[in-house]
Structures are given as C-alpha cells and as structure tokens.
Image (cartoon, rainbow, N blue to C red; front, top):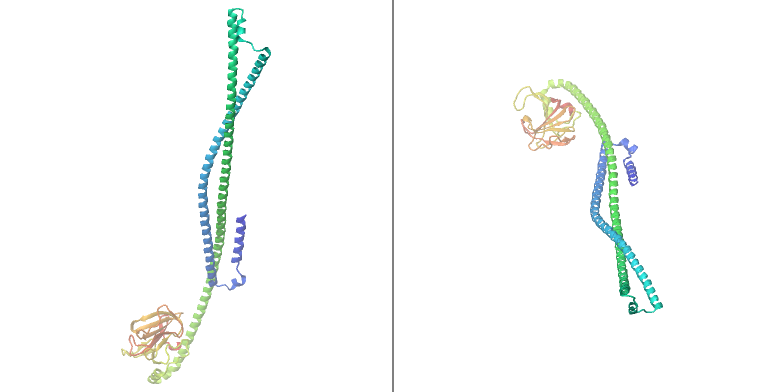
Length: 445
C-alpha cells in the first residue's frame, strides 16, 4: 500500500513539474530549453543521490539485520541447548513419577502388611487375654509320650519363632515405611524443582524469541522503507529521462529553426550587399564615364588635385579607413613610384597620412590575416562575407591591433599607418577584393 501511494505521489509531482505552459511553449527558444535541461539535470542528480542514500541505508540495515541474526543464532543455539535440557528434565520427571508410583505402591504394600500383622497380633493378645497365660513347661509336661513331647517342643518353638519373626518384620516394615515416606518427600521435592526449572527456561526462551522477532521486524521494516525509496527514485529517474529526451528533441528543433532563420537573414544580407555592390559599381562606372573626358584634358592636373584633396568618400556602403587623409595614388594604371615601371597596375588606393594614424575597419567582418605579407609589409585582411574582402597594407611595426579569427565591427581600430614592405613613405594601401580579385575601391567608399 505504501509503495502504491508513493508511486502516485511521484507521478503527480512529475506531472506538476513537467507540465509545459502553452503560452511559454510558443515563444520558447533553444536557450530556454538549455536552461530547462540544466535544471532537469540537477533534479536527475538529486534523484540519483537520494537513490544512493536509500541504497546505503538499506545496506546498513541489512548489515545490522545480519549481525542481529548472527547474535540471535547464538540465542537460538542456547534455545536448542535449553530445549535439550528441558527434554532431559522431562525424562527425569517421568522417571521420578515412575519411581514415585513404585515407591507409593511399595509403601502401600508395607502399610498393608503392618495392618495385617497388627490385626494378627491383636488376635493373639486377645486370645492370651481370654485363655490366660499358658506355661510352655506345662505344655511340655502334659505330653503323653516322648514323641509327643518332641512334637510339642517343635510346635512351641515354631510358635515362638513365628512370633519373633512377626515382630521383627513388623519393626522392619515400620522402618521401611518411614524410609519410603522420606524417599517420596525427596522425590516430590526434586520433581517440583525440575518443574520450576522447566518453567524458568520456557520463560527465558519466550523472552529471547520475542526480542529476536522485534529486532528482525525492525530491520525488515527499515529495509522495506529503503526499497520503497529506491523504487520511487527509479520511477522519478525514468520520468526525468523521458522529459530530458523531450527537451533535447525540442531544443534540436528550435536550434534548427533558429539556424534556418539566421541562414535566411544571412542570405538576405548577402543579397542586399550584392545589390549595394552592384549599384556602387554602376555608379562608379557612370562616374568614371563622366570623368573620362576631363581626365583626358588634364590628367596631370586632375591627378595632382585628387592627391591633395582630403578623401571624404563617394557615398558607397563602406566607411573611410582613415580620417583626414588624402588620396596620393588612385586605383588603376600608373608609373610605379619605386620601380619606375610604366603602365604598372595599382590594385588599390593609397591614403597619405602621418605614421601612427588610426586605421579602422570599413565594415564588420572576420580577420583572416594579420601579419607580414610579401611586399605589403604588415598587413590585415578582413572577410565581410559574400566573397568581399578588404586589405590594409604597410602598417607600421607593432601597429597591428587585431588577430586572425577575431570578429571586428564597422569603425573599430584595427591598425596604425606605417611604411613597411615596398613603400616610399607613411601611407595606407587599401584594397577591395571580390572573390579574391582586386576591384576599384572608390565606389565602395
């Protein structure tokens, strides 16, 4: 009955604890499920601890029960010994009762003989009293012959002997009766003592047996209670394991949904970025076409004016990598400032600035390179997703402020202007690369 009640209580408790709320389930996230799983794990651990404790208590109770059983086995051995003694006492009692019966019969026979002799003596005395005392000499002298004399003498002797023997036996029987009475008294006393011993031993055995039953019942009850607790914890562990499986499935489902949403958002962002890049390239082409004529008329003047004007951007999606700098060399064909090579392709845009000027990320992304890289000197490359990279070169020694794998945000300081690698002076060489190939960075700024 206890086990059924305990099981129902555990089931009701589990139903209250694990019943999800309809309103919360709709807005639940994988993080919420993770927190529920952690809480559930704690309950599992508590249940396991309770089960272990119950098992330990059961083992302890079993130990003491076994120990008590061993002690009681000793008592039972004593009980067996006493029972054997009681058997011997019973045999002795039976023998004593038999002896009492025989002695009583012998006493009764002796008393009967005494009564018979007393009756005979009483008759002899009455006869003597009635006939008077007869002289043995008169009897002998009244003989008619010598033979008659001898016969009379033998008869008198026989009578005298009989009287003497009767008196002797009478005396002996009286003494015998006294001895038998004493013997009976002793035997009765012994029997009474034996019966008393037997009752004492029976009482002692009854007490020991009762103690044994009480002790064993006590430890049996403790063992049964421990087993009930262990069974309750087993049921609770099964319920917790079921709930944990359900929560894990729910977490996996929510995580998949969240991943799908992030993937959709990333795809939308990439598509938006691609559209912005395409629009920027289109604007750049329009601007390039519009400036083409003016560039042909006065390439030198235009180049000088562009290099001396402070770079402020062209309305592109990226921020400026440095502040207060001017473009000292644009993207495209030029005479290489170091080698003097004619028609050399300049793959980026140079910003002239004082050494130590802050270089900032033009957009959020992941650093994929932050070290010395060939003729670029100290260099940082940031991956912005969608195949778009930005490159920052000629950073001064100790000027790299980020590390490979680090996430950076738009406008975050990532380095300082320097003149490392193949460079004629302090400046930032900035590139935009799409799928690994450099493109004109002007439309992006």
